[in-house]
Each structure stands twice: as structure tokens, then as C-alpha cells.
Amino acid sequence: MGTPQLKILVVDDEADARIGLSRMLRAKGYEVIELSRGGEVLQKAKSEWPALIILDIVLPDIPGTQVFKTLRDDPITKMIPVMLLTAKPDIVGEIPTFEQKSDRYFEKPGRMDELLDTVHQMLTGKK
Image: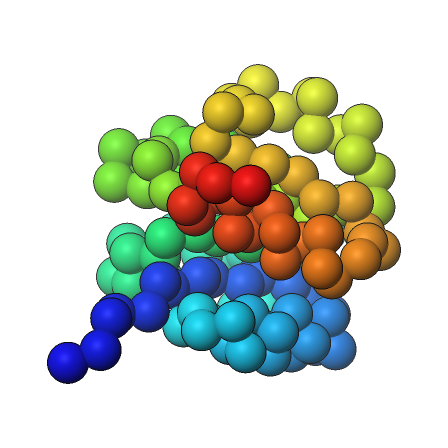
């Protein structure tokens, strides 16, 4: 029996960005669940238990910052690490529950190899 794949929840309303990132993560051996709306994240995080959530800040229904806060306020999801995707990194400093110890942000657009390196670090604790 093979090693179980780590599950990553990718949340981005831009289909091209979401599909491209998901494809690269799958190529690295991760299991990926794709979502395009913030309203789906909490329930999916509880039912799927991802090892990591990659969350765009700009979503059509609920801002990613609010989704992040909801994840942190819930005792079941508060320990799941989150990588916030943003074109405006200064907004991350305005999120009171954001902690660099377990969470990260990635500035869009960015290099895919850097994003994959950050994912690896977040999941393994290794550089």
C-alpha cells in the first residue's frame, strides 16, 4: 500500500489560476480539492481535513480575509495552516488572527516554484 497523499484545499475564483496551481500541486504528489467560493471553505475543511488551505483573498461571495477569520474562530479548523494569496500583502497585517508561525501569505503574481517551495515548507517544516 502506498503512502497517503497530503490533501490541499485550493480556493480561487480565477479558474485559470486555480486549475494551473492545482495541476502543479498534483504533479508534486498532493491530492487537491478545488473551490471557487469562500462560502464553501469551512464545510469542506471540516469534511475533508486538508493538510493545508491555499486561499485567495479576493473571492466573489465572501472576502478571503473573512474566510480566514472564520477558519481561525472554529475549534475544528483553527489548526489547519493557511496560505493567503494576495496582490496586496499589506492587507495581511490587518488580519488580527494571522500568525506567521503556521500561516503564510504569497504575493500574486509570483513564481510557481517559490509557491511550491512555501507549500513544502508549510507541510514539512523543512526548507
